[in-house]
Amino acid sequence: MTRSPARRPHRRRTLGAAALVAAGLTAGALPTVPGPAAASETPTQVREATSGELKEVFFVGNNWEGTADVINSRGDYAKIGRIDMIPDKKERLREIYLNPVKLAFFLGIRLGPGEGHDQYVDDMYTTKDGKSVVASRPSFADVVSIDVESGEINWRFPVSGFRSDHMAVSPDGTQVAVSSSISNTVHVLDMATGKEAGSFKTGDKPHENVYTDGGKYLWNMAIGEVNTDMDAPWQDFTKGDRRITVADAKTFQVKKIIDMRERLDAFGRKDLSDALRPVAFTPDESKMYFQVSFFNGFVEYDVHNDTITRVKTLPKNPDTSDERTTYVNDSRHHGMSMSPRGDKLCIAGTMDDYVTVVNRETLQEGPLVTASKPYWATVSGDGKHCVVSESGTDQVTAIDFATGEKVTSIPVGDHPQRVRLGHVPTDWTGPTTG
Image (tube, rainbow, N blue to C red; front, side, top):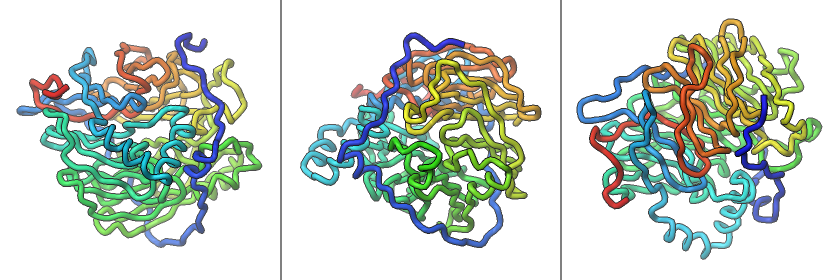
């Protein structure tokens, strides 16, 4: 396969003083917490395109631009409207530039995870009534709720520390969990008011959050330090405390700590990083699949038996360097989703510039569909397609789960990352102020 000619060049990571501050290397001791292994996330369900006065859509977060494109969640994936996710940009920047500590972290995010850009919108979920979209904004270290009709901010929650990251919405749609990647904390907020319901501590640099067992538990995956050039295997000790933290979603008490280093070693893969990136669970909640730093492939984990069962290595693009410091935020592959039936996995081969659909039973990959720095993978509203964000060419691409072939691509804004299903009013076309 060949690399897309429109691809942006990958920047070798270099850290100035501000970025070193933002790196926040604070490896802590791994606590011993009793408790049974939690069940896994309820899979994405096939939903109706319209429900009463609401229309199901995709929100595409254009991270570097600070906008969210709203597109159809199935069919032609046509663009419906766009929302400015940083209407308060001037006010936020004024606060940052008047505070030397905030400024140091702001510039550190730009030089580190932002690849030279500010990170204005990471993750997004809509409220159940489709009136608001809640989003995390890493560079502004906050979570905001924005009215989809007016484009105005309903509420704002500054996270502890200096950077917000991945989120997850509870199955009942009432709460949203957000990772604060500098303070090693997960905040759980009321979707309607933005008030904090609770929080819990995690490993270093909390990343993805997943509600499991119908919303009973909340899993957090801490990836450790990913923004330095200390990427050689012998320097792994510099990456910090990477672990899964499982908390009770009502009391926010930590119920279990899972150290994948021990499980990977027991499986004979001491060579693999234990920094978990995106994950996907089977519909029966028995298996979890996850990607790790630097690896072109994924791992299968038996949730109930607490063991690694299989590791799949996917093809290497011959044009992809073996020099780890060229991988964006240590990601070789970043983005995976599972078909509603649980028989197919869709894998975003970020640094290898492809997307592929893998048979879950045999782990045999399908066609390698060329894509430019695909960064996230999700499932279309009708469950037929895997939808990925191509951050290198600013588009969203649909891949057929049945054939593994490309269906279509839709242009979006600058550096799309997270793609989430949501709802807006049926006749919505964008904010009245937009």
